[in-house]
Length: 149
Image (cartoon, rainbow, N blue to C red; front, side):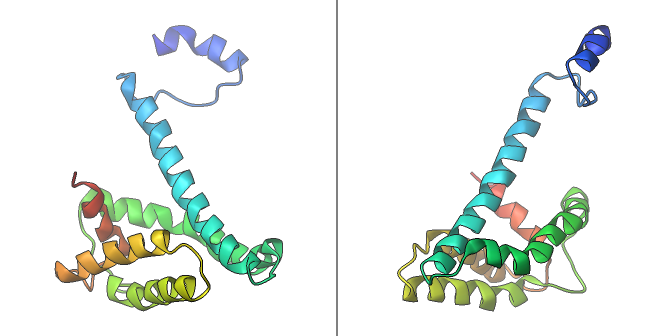
């Protein structure tokens, strides 16, 4: 069916290819994009609350943080590969090294009267992975948490 309507889709500005013959898969892709988007936006908005409550312009923050945040897109392929292979060992950036920074963010949020649910959720994920013996694994190990109901 996709091939049948490809010329019309092209006229309408469609640039995407056929993802899968199962019509539900493109919908799942869309949901995955939204989940990624909301997680990123929520992290940014938490940061914006921390900064703006101190009178710091969020746009100025972007001047400094923009390159680091943009670099995340560059590591997504590596994380995707680790998830696809089910191999989470890493020579750098092990989960145990993330914990102190996440804990600092929770503490700073509380100290400044900012809602700490978002960083506390992350701290809970990291702590569970550490309890499960994955201190030396990549951040990609946290995918296992999301696979559980």
